[in-house]
Length: 320
Image 1 (tube, helix red, strand yellow):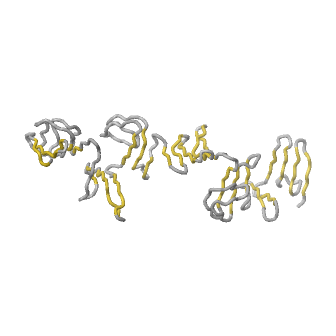
Image 2 (cartoon, helix red, strand yellow):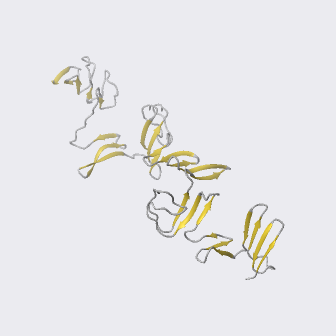
Image 3 (cartoon, helix red, strand yellow):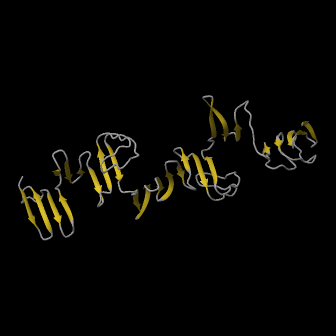
């Protein structure tokens, strides 16, 4: 192929092909601006070789590099992109890409490797919307963490020991975010809705600051807790929302409530007062005056004595 090189005012141009044809591929080195321009006509490809095995191509649609050749960014080749055609064993050095004593998994053939080889050099993914840049993922090398963002807002931090969901960000499960876990830093008044967590007209107690919340926001969706008993899954807690019922354990299991001073009330009444729910069972340390409870049928503990309370409020000992 005929070639011609000539010097212009600010640089040097190389034209490949017939000089009279302006559509041929050209390389222009601009000395004043310190850059090089490749010009390739439509539907043509410009190809150059480092050697016969490493052909690189440039066309109007692509810049092609062969397998196992790196794109290196930075004066000191700090950041590297490489398509690795063969496998690489775990924790194996790859010159100028994977350095020192690596802690990396095994890499499959035809893997794209993105590497920052500068000590404590980070990697961050940023997009732009409405004229404003927003972070979505930040790899903090010095901290050893992967930080995830949603439109620039920190959402989660992944480290070697934990996956940390940030304060007031809920972990949603299900396509429609049906199940929710959330750590709330502020207090929440009783019966107050909380977007994505407590919906509609809630019936809920007030929450202290730094509370963990678990919610199923799907209508009639239940909540259950299971454990492995002798190789078989067993239910330990079951919230049946459609029946408005909370179940503890299985039939025949003991339910122990361990606390130095505990009161367990079964029914709609939440205080030990002059009235208690009909057919309730009330356990309370301490004593109560005769007639203070008008439960139709109840059992209570006063200190170390197990007592029963009948309709007229008379207290009699069952067992000491």
